[in-house]
Length: 345
Image 1 (cartoon, rainbow, N blue to C red):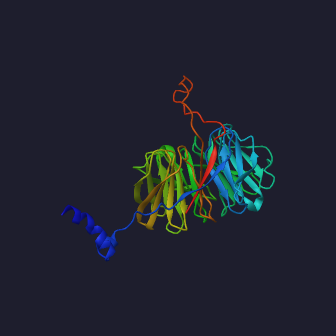
Image 2 (image 1 turned 180 degrees about the vertical axis):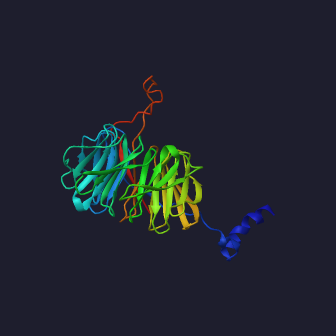
Image 3 (image 1 turned 135 degrees about the vertical axis):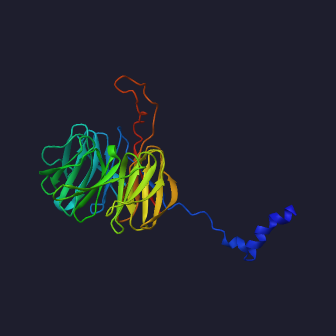
């Protein structure tokens, strides 16, 4: 009987029996397409895709690396950006903006020449993420300390106001209709404010999520996706503030993006994965896969044309000895190993 039982699944398969109804495991929706070597030294934070210019801007220590997306080669560097975090571009004005966390400034550069435009602009404390909002034609610089957003005229770089956010801001999003959303990390909130008046309109808790960083948005369903430090992604209805879902991610959750072509939310985890979550309906979400990336690949950007995903990392060396000034040192970074990873279907 043992041998007969072992043979039965094969027979059922051959003759159209129940084995045909068994589903093979779903293939991962994204896989590694390219590794773009950059090299050099230093840490990293955000990446930004400029689909109009077909370029990828990558934060890297005290400079920004500029990658041509047609050739996958580094075609330039924007230096003198100490503690660089975020980069965004305004193609209509031929300007790019960079937040520099170490000296509380924003560097403005020419998109064609990559040369600076004027002197760095003073900002609030620890400028981190930033966002160009085409509706208001403004650039919002978000401070990760002090609860402010310095607001610039996108065409001139002139400071036009300050938004009082009431907490340490992280990643933002826009609905393209005059409303800006941003995670407030130290209060575990996602808030909405008016792009013109700069007044905060709504505050929504993301509990049980804690310390939200990455933020993605689906304008069709009005859903906000907050990636949280305690390995959760929280879905919030931006209109009502109702919490729709809480899904597990992985250690080191940081970035998040939304792929409108697939209705996938992709959360990047520094432990070395993308958590891919499908928006089945506005109120139902399914974890599709945990795609292997690399240790340290904690931020993410999407190309809205190709729908490819980009992240970056480097090899790690030993952890330096703790000191009084730095009691919790991070692992060292092996020089020359910094690279961008490109994923797609």
